[in-house]
Image (cartoon, rainbow, N blue to C red; front, side, top):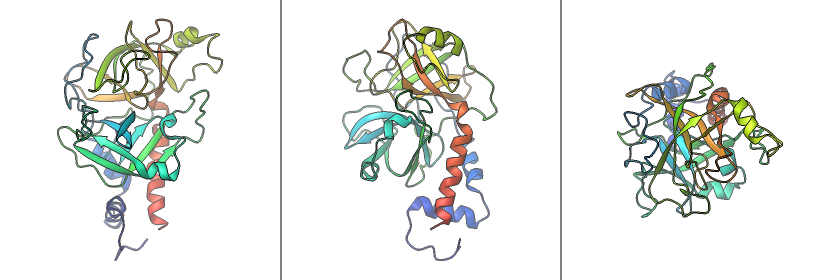
Length: 293
């Protein structure tokens, strides 16, 4: 890769060239981003709280197509957003060119609410994603230019790739703009629900005889009476906090369920800790794409 006269390139690629030519690895830069991760409410909201305080979740993003929100996602560093594969797997190159990521957004209407809107350079979803079983339901969006962090826009923390914590029986928070109830009208302002995780063994028992594909180890389940994620929430985060004042960690991606808030069936989330290595490989691929130009 030449380090002089790179020509006209997107800001994102120019950033990578600057890093590479200065001897700073992209992974090192992204790790520096992660030092600023995990901002959110001081403590886990109570089970009854639903409307989020404006910009209290600075890592939350909305995925927009023609100014309409269809899924959520999380900013994980200055150039990447993690979301669900089923949100983007059917996108053509033309669709990707129209895809927008809205950061610092609270209300869906007016459409001018986002503080920052980014276009997407690359969409990567897991090669083993299965649209019938929702196995490996994870995707990574590479933004066309880096995000400048502010008090209301910053990344979420991810669990370490060697984490053995199954996060069972934990109070967690799911956020999104989905419908509050099954067949209901989509919420206008960002919603938050506090729910409880369970073991995968318990979750498998809940779906036994109903879902033939079963609950994979790379999934995590959570529920609470009358509370659940629903249509429009897909791709958004499931978050946990070790103690009041601690950083927030994303342990799940909103993936699938049977109905919404059905007392017999919990919501099912992609377990992030199972895919941290995959995310890091996508970061390396971004650099490979740059060097091949």
